[in-house]
Amino acid sequence: MPRFKVSYAPSVRRLPSYLLLAKQAQEHGDEYISGTLIALELNLEPIQVRKDLSITGIAGKPKRGYPVLPLIGAIEAYLNWDKRVDAIVVGAGNLGSALSGFPGFKQHGLYIVAGFDADPAKVGGRIHGSPVYPIGELAERVASLGTLVAILTVPSANAQDVATTLVSAGIKAIWNFTNAKLKVPDDVVVQNEDLSSGYAMLSMKRRIRSALLSDDAD
Amino acid sequence: MPRFKVSYAPSVRRLPSYLLLAKQAQEHGDEYISGTLIALELNLEPIQVRKDLSITGIAGKPKRGYPVLPLIGAIEAYLNWDKRVDAIVVGAGNLGSALSGFPGFKQHGLYIVAGFDADPAKVGGRIHGSPVYPIGELAERVASLGTLVAILTVPSANAQDVATTLVSAGIKAIWNFTNAKLKVPDDVVVQNEDLSSGYAMLSMKRRIRSALLSDDAD
DNA sequence: TAGATTGTTAATCGATTAACAATC
DNA sequence: TAGATTGTTAATCGATTAACAATC
Image (cartoon, rainbow over all chains, first blue to last red; front, side, top):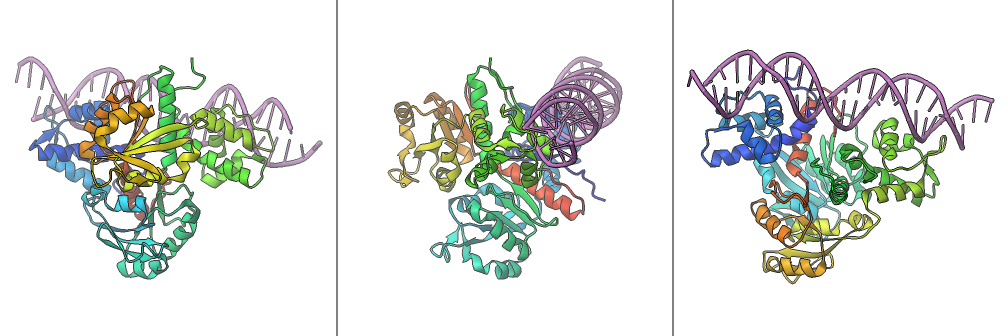
């Protein structure tokens, strides 16, 4: 029986921001950071920060706040970010390359160990230090690398085909940056990163703002 | 008084997926598409699709579904995607370049008309057909282009400084791909696209799945 | 000590889902 | 007509917020 509840999605999504502030406090040499301060910084309610942090099991101290180092440890442990995770990037274009170089990922234990691309011109090259292989070698490479996580940045039209290949190669988690709704077996998790829905939110916020209403939904 | 309610954020985020399916139905030559089918395709409840679509004002027909062309029109009108919007990309690295080339954006009326970068090596080049200018020319270029929307893909450490420059140049909407929490005036809208929170979700899903629990939260 | 902050329990709010009549 | 599907109203569920005692 796991000691964490299923879901809490909105809280989980906020944890990385708390983690970042805690790390900044650490660099600054602070021993404690209060939920009040975090809330102020992120434009949230203090009670929400306290509720969110409570799921990690961290214990705060009245009048001081949360001890910085244990807080960092608690968030990282809760998110499983205290262990190294290897991943491949499938689609070594600009997006795949951008993600491979994102400095935050290594900090969170995510290492991109290889790239794959259908374009022969990209094969043999490197994205941020990792080799790019032809997509035909996916199965054997994943097997020998033992990678369980894939970041999918191919054109949407090819997404399902590539996902199917990934699954049969043994991949158990797909971070999907295409707008295809992937069909995968039950034991494979998919996290969709949908740029269009982000742009829909921006469009609606502009519209609401220009209608002279106030709104701060994210 | 606007004819749309403030918020509905989760519904707004789902609309682009409905739009995509409607466009596919159109290409396929279908006259109607049912909420039942959309739900099946996206792994949602039919009642949720109907509720979501009702905010656009579209009227369906019992036994048939929603008329495809009016549905496309209603979603695009609701999201303001039926009008051209010009934007600049600030930070012409891999991520900025990937976003500039994302085919979905033009379809949604979003045109990237210029890029800006602090790196002299990038200046004078092009990202997907648009010129890249030095960041020092931001104010004058934005003024002459009349652009109101900026996509921010600079390193997080520079994000607030650049955002301040954007605001004084007259930008009214910032799509923020950095993890900085931007401080901007009330009349400027910000949409945060937080990769770390997406990765937090993926991490939790893996953890929950491996704990043999089932969960399909997005 | 006084007061800021945590953490718990209860209340509120908003989103999802259920029920079902209307209708093509 | 029969039956699939819409659209509305009500119920449920989960997340946010409020209230407040505990405590350093």
